[in-house]
Image 1 (cartoon, rainbow, N blue to C red):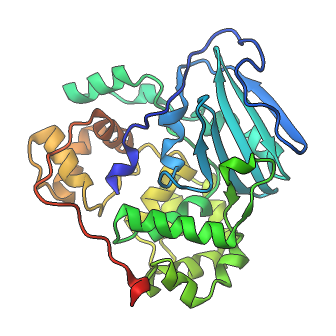
Image 2: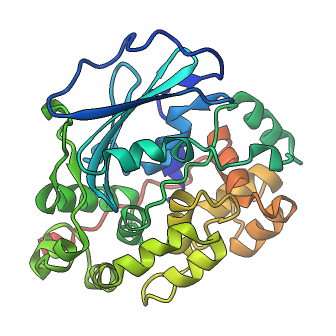
Length: 335
């Protein structure tokens, strides 16, 4: 849903420059063996804006933001589970990682924070986008290099309210995932289940989490070919989307939501969203009743950067006022 890109209240901005004093303001060392890395980006990096799309709701057990501005995230990497803490210290980004996936996560830290993104390729043609871009200089598109961690929650978000999808993700990860390596117990971090574990979840547990048969069946079809789908992270975004959409139940909406995160796809505009066409139409043409076709027409001047344009619109806060109460969430678990 479009609202997932709203600005987060906790945000830390890093600007390129000299490395600050190592460890200043850092979270105390956590139990277990860890590896660290300090990296100085040559551009302003806003951790909240860049990594925010990876967060699936305020209770996401794979993502936390702490009061000191650190971002904690768990992953199931090709090397195994890992926990990553990223923090802004002066002009540098400090990272610490635990678990068998620690080295993999640290090696890809620059890509995660937008090293392969090119904001200069975007030329704003509307005043609203120009203003928002100037006010959000730290916005970069993340590239996780991991497909399944974005694909599965995107499938859960199909045709339901955001709150329903977040609840399902939270329940399933906490029940079938594993405690994150090295993370502070107070954060209650978990690593998402491996593909085989997803495949063994009983039907009644999907039901209890509020996931209907159509979505759970799509997840099961995807995890059976997880290795092939993970290869899509190294492909061009359009090729990656075509591979994902070979799976019945994965369409343009789900593939776009996935490659935006896994591949850093700047042009993967989300088609089929309940809210986004109206938001884009309202911001660029004063038409809150715009459909997908009109949205794509309005975004055509930004071809190659349409996802970035949509994100800037969402971050601008220029959204149409509500005309009705929020949609009442369903609860199939009560059936």
